[in-house]
Image (cartoon, rainbow, N blue to C red; front, side, top):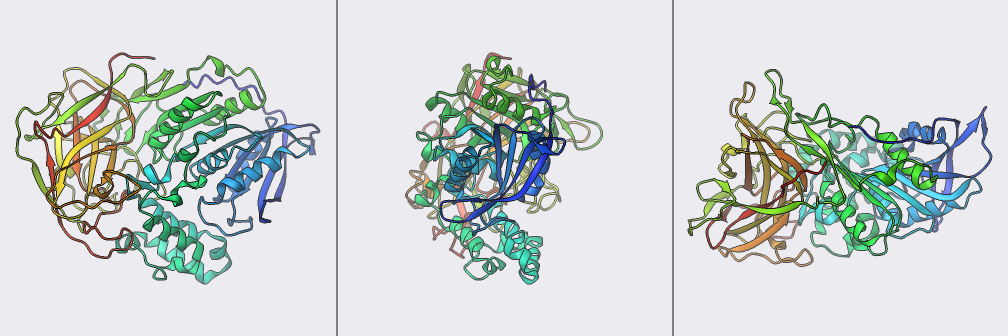
Length: 607
C-alpha cells in the first residue's frame, strides 16, 4: 500500500527514559509509567512537548521501542502498566477500571511542566479498549486518538456476540492469570496456571467453570471476572461500564480527531466500523477509518491465514501512519491529511487464487477510498436461500418444505480460521475443510459434508460481484426445545485447482445468534418448541470482490466452536447449566418465509 504519509517529525533527538514513575490516581493507587523524553547529548530538551500515551496490561517494557520512536521525533511518550499489572499497584479486573484510571492519567500528564497540554493516545486491542474507556469520560486534555482493533460494545460483538460468549475471553482469563503479579510472586500459583494454560482446550471443553473448581480460584479477581462474563448473559448494567466499549457513551464521548484502524479478519471488525460510523455522525472533529485485510495484531501484514493479499495488501510503514496522525493534530504540521478522504479500505479479491504448490491462496485486492462507510454507492441486496441449496437474487416462489437437521452440542461445527484473537487457533482466511491445525477439527472432509451444515450457493458468476459494507442475515427458524443458536458464514468459492481439487471455500465473514435473545438483548425469552420465529442479526462487515467464475455461498448451522461457546439447547441458566441435549433445528426457505442474506453490493467503483 502507498501510505501517502508526509512525515514531518524526523528523528532529531535521543531518548531519555525515566522508569516506573508512579502516577497517582484519585483513589490513591499508583500506576507505573515509563516516560521517554526528547534529549540531546544525554540531557532532556527544555520546553513543552505533546504526549503520546499507551496504557497496557502486557508489560510496558515491551513498548520501549515505541516510546523511543516518539521521543526521538519530538514527543514525550508515556508507556503505562494498567492497574494491577506488572509494576502498577492495585488489583487487576480486566477493563472495568480503565475509564477513570485513563482519565486521571491523561490529566496528570497534561499538567506536567514538560507537556504542552496536548495528550494523544494510541494502542491496539486492550490498549485500544482503554483509550475508548477514558474517551467515554471526556478528559479535557485528550487531543487525539489512534484506536487499533478496539471494541464498540463488548457485549454485542466482542466478548459476547449477539448473546453468545466468545470463548477467546474464557481462554484470556487463564492466560492473563498465568502472567499476573500474583503468579509471578508465587511459584506454586504460577505452575498451576501455566499448566492450566497449557491444557486450555480441556478447560474449555469442561466449561463453564464453577467458583472454586479451576486454578483461577488462586487469584480471585481473575476468577470473578471469568465468572462474570460467563453469567452476565443479558445486556445489563455490567456491560454498560465505560471499560466495556463506548457504545453507551457516544453522545458524551470526547470530540477529538480519531483514527480507527481495523482488519477484515480481526476480532473487532464490526466494532471498528461501528465506532467510526456513530462518532462521525456526532462529532465535529475529523474521524477516519483505515480497514486492511488483516488479522488481530497483524496491522500491515499482507497475509491472513492461508490467504495472501500481495502485492498490495500490506502496509509499508504502519508507524508512519500513526505518526502522521499525531503530527497533524498534536503539532499542527503540514501532513497532507486534509487532502485524504475519511475512509480507506482494502477491497479483497480478484487475485489468481491457489497456486500449484502449497496452501497459499493469492486472493489479491486493491485499496479504495470513500467519504463514508459504507461507500455511498452501496446497495443492500437480498440473496435468497432455496430448498434445492441454491442462492440467488430471486425469492422462492413456492412454499417448499423447510430443511431440518440435528444439532448435537457434543459434536459442534469446528472453527476454521476467521475473526479470532487471544485463543490458540489460527485466524484469517482458510478453505473450510477439517484440518489438524484447528483444535476442534477431526478428519479431512469439508465442513459442507456435515449433516448439520446447510449450504446455499450461487451459480458460477458471469460477472464479478463487489460487496463493501455491513452484512445482515434474516432467517425464519424453529427448534424442538426452549433455546438454540443459529450461525451464518459467507464464503467465496474458487473453482477447482491442483491443490484444491474440490475448489476452495474461502471464509469471508461469519456470525451467530442465540434464539432466546431474538427480541431483546436485555431480556431472555425462551422459545416455544416447534414455533417458527423470524430472526435477524449482523455479521461482521467486509469488502470482497467475488470474481467471475467464482460462486457465493452461505452456510447456516448452529455452532462455530471454539470461536463461540456451544449452546446446550436446554434453556437453562447460561454459564451455569451442566446439561446438554440434541436439538432438531429447522430453517425455512419458502415464499412466505424467505430466509436470505443482505449483501452490500457496490455497482460502481470509487478508487
